[in-house]
Length: 455
Image 1: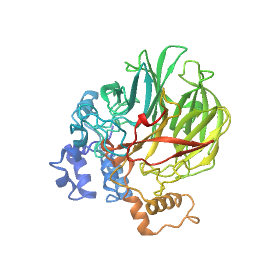
Image 2: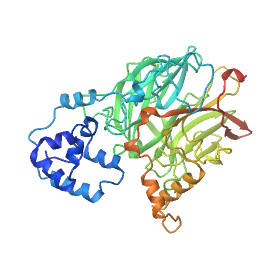
Image 3: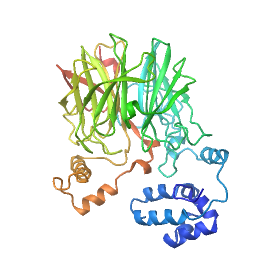
Image 4: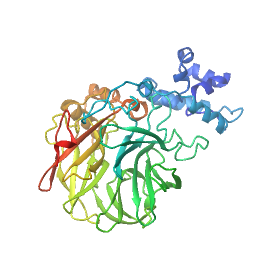
């Protein structure tokens, strides 16, 4: 084994020969790192991402080449690596407790706290209703400060009787700290859990996507919603397709389950799941093909209403929000047809600065569907001008002749929040009710709203 830029900076600096490489290519950095444990615990690659261009790619590559000539005295043990992860503190925002009292409405875009006063950590999440209780579950980002390499610390769940006030039920899926190759290791890009109850087996089946190089699913199941969950499959790619954002849905009439996912960033494919919901058995549809970023689709959200099947998606621009699209079909096994932007009154062209993760039909309500969405980077608001610039800047990478971008605009894009350097522990939630006009679906802004206002 040799040194490399994916090691913690503190470990690189422990060896004089490796530290000399850093001093040669990045003079003065060692002095800045000393006394800053948060920075010393980052990998050099992570630091470069966080520095947003201050460390040139060619310099980073040269450092990696030189470090690769130096043999490690010994490898870090799994126990040492686990201790390093455990010692990563909660972010300031996640640790903060503020008494908020009982909530009587939904306030889209405002910080949402649980009954103990802590920010709710259920990002990229979804709702499940059972026996009079709503469960809200999602990515636990309480250590993800954008500086350390922790992406998600397990899957956290909350319970509520009214959809307003939430009790923290803890981690229903724990991170695997002892196996760096596990799909559930905290540095793996664990995203967007979705849970269905399989009536055929009585099990609760959870599909979770890993983004980045892994681009796969980890699949788990449990006897109860709150777990414990056991891993059934890791590194699963249906029909060898690289996995992107997805959603799963159980058809009301047949009980069959379907999964729709971004496949290789080449389109959204629909897959029928096996009777136990643990694997894909066949491809049933394909839509949104032939598109490149930021126009190719992700953030898939499925629902059905009055016999029609709906799919909502976002474009692809990382944590920077963009325009959504709605599509409709008569069946889960036939293709979807776009019916346009479901946020027609949103003048920011950013889906109200949010990205949808689920559409939830509220039990007991005649026609109330809620768009469950994340505002990933609340400190970076997008207006129409910024949305247009970012769209062109990303598209110009694929079609430079068609999309013109100035050097200043490129700098703005480079200065925008990146996936690896965003503090997502402070991401907020945007919950809004859907409205319907025939087949058309629309989502309109409300500063606050109440379930009691719906039949």
